[in-house]
Amino acid sequence: MAPIKGRLGDRKNATMELDGREIKLVVKGGFFGGKSSNRVIKLDDATSIKHGTGEKPFPDAMMIKIQYPEEELSFFSINKAPLEALAVEMEAFIEKRDKLLVEMEKEFVRDREAHVALLYLNLEFVEALMELVTRINGSVDWGAVDTMYHQVERVNLDRDNLTVTRPSHLSLERLSIGIDTRNVDIIKSEVYDLLFVLRESCAEKARHVEPWFNNVFHRLFLDSLFSFWGRHLESLTGAFSGESVENSEIRLQELGKLVHKEIGEDDKQLTTSQEYSENHRILFEWVEALQNVEFEPSEELEKRLAS
Image (cartoon, rainbow, N blue to C red):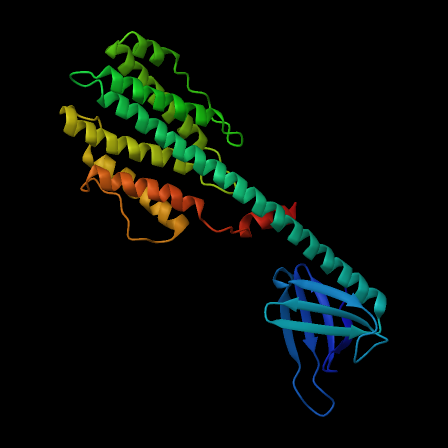
């Protein structure tokens, strides 16, 4: 669209042109002097655009009023049809953008809540299974084992009831048989298999990109909790966890960097030199912090505006 001649609200001569998503304004120098100036307003920055006639100081001209952060621009032209067409095009963009922002923020809240809930329940499931394992080490209190198994059942049911993320079902049938028959070998074998299946499902989820949550968190949080429990079980049983301290440290640092990139820097760090209880506390605090990340639409908004 060619530049449209007109005047600003302060009566200076100017031309206005829409070039993609930039409003280009050229203000002419006055008859008695004054310099011309060029100005570019990004349409993305506009908060509202209105147009019509009857506005002072040129009530017979078509007016377009552009509001953007802390400023307002009024442009008038007797070349009404092109300016009205320009205004309509700008208004359509603003309307589409604002509608997308509302839709996207709703998606953001829904999806983020769903992913954090799944993340939390996956960790809770691991916790319950590992607590179960500690109760069959040495002399077994089967009453305590039964109580912990009910916790495993509860967390698994909560996972199954997630409707947005729809995680894969984890069958407790064989574990239940081990509990009922008081068979320690079956219990250990089933706990191992359940943790393996859960780890594989989180690793698979981490391969898929979604707009509002970094799915890599599902794998990294789970792996970090496995590291904590491995060290913890080593201290309880004396058996090697299967992962070196160096590899554990690399895993924890990777999670820390990604979390801080998402939530901002804090003074919390996961490290193998810390007590299990401290690492455990920080891990679950970070899960909660991921829920409180602010909505940032920029990249996804660009994709949807272009579609």
